[in-house]
Every structure is written in structure tokens, then in C-alpha cells.
Length: 154
Ligand SMILES: O=C(CO)[C@H](O)[C@H](O)COP(=O)(O)O
Image (cartoon, rainbow, N blue to C red; front, side, top):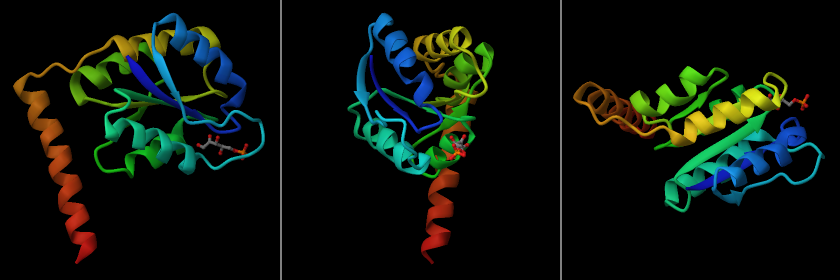
């Protein structure tokens, strides 16, 4: 699987570890930075990761900031992205199975390396379960997004 990965400076301490986990899982990584510890703004990194997912170059996106929260807020502003902060393994797979989440966000200040590896594995191995209620709800999310975009434009 091709995964777009990005971290801000607060996620930087976990960066190499996450890269190693992705490599162990056999993923091809599209590196959206930052590769240096100097401060960057998570909305910029989130935008770069989301662009790769929306273009189809990456099947999933993974973002690491301090808490995962800012990255998720930013990613969810991008139409077509369904992002979630997941700090427990159940959410990490159910968010894909039920909600078709395409970007997972982690907090490097919140989870340790072992849990992070489990979360990444659970997220990447999960597949959307195209059952009627899940398909209907995800379609409603897309409809909501379109409606709100239309309202903002008027
Ligand atoms: O977690 C985050 C957003 O949710 C950021 O990583 C965090 O706010 C960065 O903070 P600072 O610039 O003080 O290192």
C-alpha cells in the first residue's frame, strides 16, 4: 500500500520510527515532511498529505503532530478527506471499516512507539465494509460536505 506520511515538529521525534513501521508493513511511503525539527505549521503538512490521498497517489494518509488533533482538524477541512485521531486500536480499524476514514492522525506526545505501531497496523490493514448502513452514512457525510460548500459559496 502507498501511504502519504507527514509530521510537524512535534511529531518529528516519532518520524523515523513511523517510517520504519511503514517499511516493515511493506508500505511505499510518500514523504510529505517535515524532515527537520524546526517548527512548521501542521495545516501545511496536512494539506500536502491530503493532496496525495485525493490524487490517488496514496491510498491512505498518516499524520503525526503533538496531539493528532490539529492535524485532524486541518485534514477534515479538505473535501473528500475523512480524518480521525485514533489512540486506541479499536478506533484505528473501525474508523476505516465503518466510516471509510482515509487519514489517521496520531499524537506523538500522547502515544508511545509500541501503541503507535499497533495503531498504524490496525488502520492500514482495515478495509471499508460496504454494508448498506455504512455506505449510506458515508454518502451522507459527502452530501453534507457538498451542501455546506454550496452554502458558503452563496
Ligand atoms: O499538536 C499539535 C496541534 O494539535 C501541534 O503539534 C502543536 O500545537 C505544536 O505546538 P508547539 O508549536 O508549541 O510545539
